[in-house]
Length: 154
Image (cartoon, rainbow, N blue to C red; front, side, top):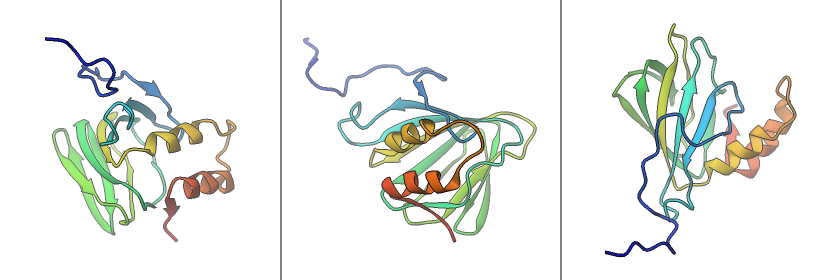
């Protein structure tokens, strides 16, 4: 049987920690699959969240839904004002338009697999990672967010 090599969506194994690390907000953000890899269906990320990390501020995605699957450790997520603690094997759907944030106040590193649909969040992370190093300039971050359909909850 011949394999279609003209199609960008080919089967392949992607191992934990593989992918391009575009960590930009204190976490390891590994882009495991992009929209180009999945024929525009979704993006796949692995987040490595250090113990005690405060996480991103409460924000809203206008374009994509996110499905978080906790693979290791625990993560605390606030979704539309309701708190959820996910442990290994737990998942939570965060629909577009709903304010949310996550952090790891626990003693161990957390690993999360995030399925994001439609794809495109990889472009946001890449642009964030290209901002100048040092303390976050929230004006620049807000500009990047706006370009990619995200906003901070006011």
